[in-house]
View 1 (cartoon, rainbow over the protein chains, first blue to last red):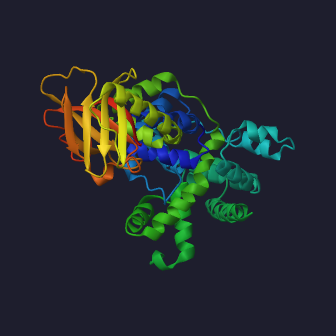
View 2 (spheres, each protein chain N blue to C red):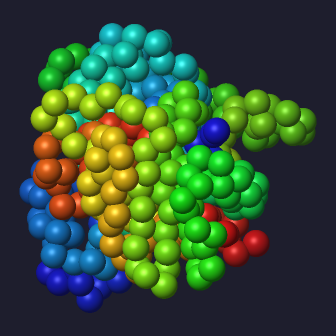
Length: 192
Length: 236
């Protein structure tokens, strides 16, 4: 079972809301590798990432009944929980995490730019992530990085400006326009 | 500032909220708006669906086994003992398979009833049967239903040991929703119970017996104890 079947994830979440531990296990097996990869990228330190993922899944177990399928996809809902917990941890340890700017989306972008279809397949992205990656690749590299830095590292506009050594106004514009373009591009892909 | 009627601003703020660049007081104000507006909740949900797949760009990493063990330990106390049914409900293959085996099961059950219960007259009106077996597939209880008399008979064909102070309770398990009680079954001999409308094989394709406190499940919405015997409920 993969995380690429939102319907299946919804069914499991509905069962988890009724405290069904077997469905919870299936949900964990399907979703945890992607979520662990995500939280590792945010926190870098393995023991912190493990602690956060544990907290996040206990929270998913306790709050599955509050998941509203008409508002967001199941993976989106779980990612929100993981991301919030990871950012809480970042603030708690108050540690400057080494931000690896260059390699962040390099793998994905390289795969997209490759003529060979295998690299993008080898990343095992869900259809939603593939669509997003495609739209991301149409943005300028720095715009892309500005959005990714904010999303992954809980950085404010001014912190992103500092990281990318750009004026604050420029960063604000990049992020705003980048998001607008992503929305437009994703809407077009959906319609296609 | 009324963001409710300003589509462009609403979209901008929703996106900034999701990506994380909306900060401090502006973020808190936006959260208050969001709590009171289904529209903003939906737009935030849409932005989350758009941007959260970015999480996958990090690449999947298999978490260590100890992580699941730790999680399992923490949820243990709150897991439902009724987990079995819920997962059964989700198992479409099981329900499809049930339809296929029903005919065979019905034939076998009729043969079984003829040999084991010679006093049972051949049913003429709409009748239902189920053979409830334990986890080793040993038959324990045979249930026959008579639709015209609105009655069912539960007959024990072996003698399960039941702890003192406990009761056996019979349940109709619908394909969707909670199991519904059909009454208590005695640990030996035969019991006649009313057969309610909701307990036809069409609406409840499965019957089960659980171990409950004396007098039956204290929970009005379903069983509290483990499932001891179960079987397909079929029309013959």
